Image (cartoon, rainbow, N blue to C red; front, side, top):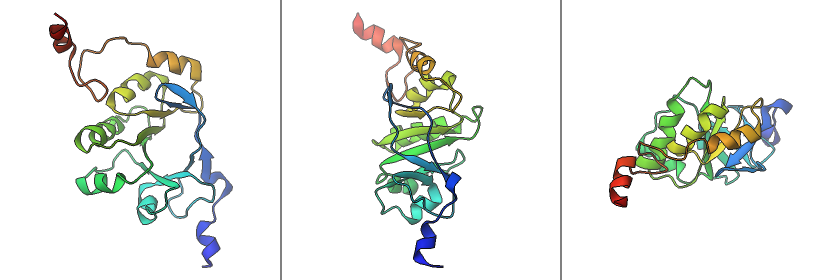
Length: 177
């Protein structure tokens, strides 16, 4: 294998993510998404599968995406600290394990970088994703931006504590008295 071949890819292997909302605002996504588990994409910066990123974690223009069945150990969380961002894949909108991964990254392991939802990300999920620690949301291609932004502001008050607000409503109300 020639060195150049390690970085070869099929043209469809890297795709720009669809509409990206970051911190509640639409932004231009500069990161491509590669689902190829064997070779690095030529186009950078790129989000690549976790195992591939681990082999090349010294490259600042690569970031990992975690499958929903990832076991988030303290060792893995420590490795992820050096990543520019961590993407969490939702293979189906009914798979809620990504919410847990995001919350663990933020609360248990103190990850302060960007946590991005990718995959089957629907408008109905966005508000809850932000409550669990996602600060970037790559919408599925058929989802529209304007309704997505409205969905993020659908609720003005949350009862439960979460990553975005760690105090329950009753405690906030007691303090206001």
